[in-house]
Amino acid sequence: MNAPVPSNSTQVENAKLLIDGRWVESNTTEWQDVLNPATQQVLARVPFATLEEVDAAVQAAQRAFTEWRQTPIGARMRIMLKLQALIREHSKRIAAVLSAEQGKTLADAEGDIFRGLEVVEHACSVGSLQMGEFAENVAGGVDTYTLRQPIGVCAGITPFNFPAMIPLWMFPMAIVCGNTFVLKPSEQDPLSTLLLVELALEAGIPAGVLNVVHGGKEVVDAICTHPLIKAVSFVGSTAVGTHVYNLAGQHGKRVQAMMGAKNHAVVLPDANREQTLNALVGAAFGAAGQRCMATSVAVMVGESRQWIPQLKALAEQLKVNAGSEPGTDVGPLISPRAKARVEELIESGVREGARLELDGRGVKVPGYENGNFVGPTLFTGVTTDMRIYTEEIFGPVLVVLEVDTLDEAIALVNRNPFGNGTGLFTQSGAAARKFQSEIDVGQVGINIPIPVPVPFFSFTGSRGSKLGDLGPYGKQVVQFYTQTKTVTARWFDDASVNTGVNTTIHLR
Ligand code: NAD
Image (cartoon, rainbow, N blue to C red; front, side, top):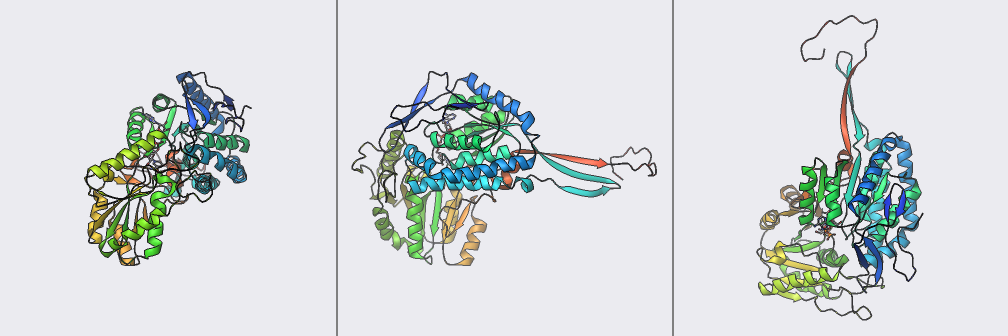
């Protein structure tokens, strides 16, 4: 088998497609470089697959479905048990590749893998997750029960910011439920995803059950319109997610689209000051702000506004450097384009009258002069009509708004169209209870800045951050990846009395 991911050799190699259990070189003429965001070193080239290659991957998945759907639950679970062991074993190696291609620190890269690994662990309990229901004697001698059956070929389209966790949200749960899968990783950093797929094959996933195609809009559109694909999971920006949701929906598919965000942290003056400020700084600037659950807005309530100078002082101490360097807090952004966009948004904040307390533009990192670095950036005096408030920046930029009461803070958060995550910092149980009840955001943290649920719950972003009713992982994704069939059954006992013809709709 050809390795899917280039080795350490100095020669730049091509990322492979996985079709029907074989790693193959694409026939395409369109390629993109995978660049190290700290150096611009070319790590590999990624193909934009042809439509024939996408079709070949889907056809392979369709063929494999016939046998895979009949594979016993225990056999499917044991593959996931092996996969979780392999991911643990190779975690450091994958983290090094992930950090090099994505830019995040090694510790954060390991976290990216670990949060995905937890989903694989959860997939090992599919036996109970996929159980149906049974009601005995719903009428005389009649039982009703449900089967949760796989739906067929499913597809996943993933973003650049979590190249391990998000693919692992998708294919393990889809496959363990008896489906087959076509994965389209981010073209910006597909290498660590490919290492995980290679481990999945080593764990025993049969040929055709998991396939990989690379590309951009053309490949995504081919997935969304392919007649054999039954369900599409998307994670990425709001613009693309809305397009995917509409296109795949028009073509009769189930779709879940997890999209952009603007996550508010509301700080009450009774909160633990040190813990709160540390949490804000970590959640705003960690991973260079390229987390969909990053805190991008701090809402300081009442007297807590006096903490802003301390917030700035903490942000100033963060070390900007390549993710591979020890002690780095803030790595580079994914691309020169992303850096230019973030800098342009910072400029818009200045133009629109916000106070730029800390400016991360123009930061110089010795030894990494070509990196896409933007340092921690802090705005105060922000109003809700400014672009730095209305747009997802997806960089290390925290905007601070000030209000007088918790009610005002809740109203402010609820007026924002996004609903991915929010947090409240307080020592008051009554305030926390009011907040969790009245806030219209799908994931709430109480003294927790990035409230991403563990895999036995589901990821439940809401409103403008999500399209489709069922979220990734947990019980919801088992529903997403299965079709419920309800059986109503009567078995006649030969000795039973003949009940005669019944022309009503009632069961007796
Ligand atoms: P993106 O939307 O640019 O790309 C996501 C996927 O869509 C990639 O695989 C890409 O190849 C494909 N794509 C890009 N342009 C396309 C087009 N025009 N038509 C069809 N497909 C296209 O997102 P990104 O920049 O990789 O990731 C960052 C975004 O993802 C942020 O908005 C972030 O908030 C969001 N995100 C959301 C969650 C969540 O759970 N809500 C999680 C992670 C990231």
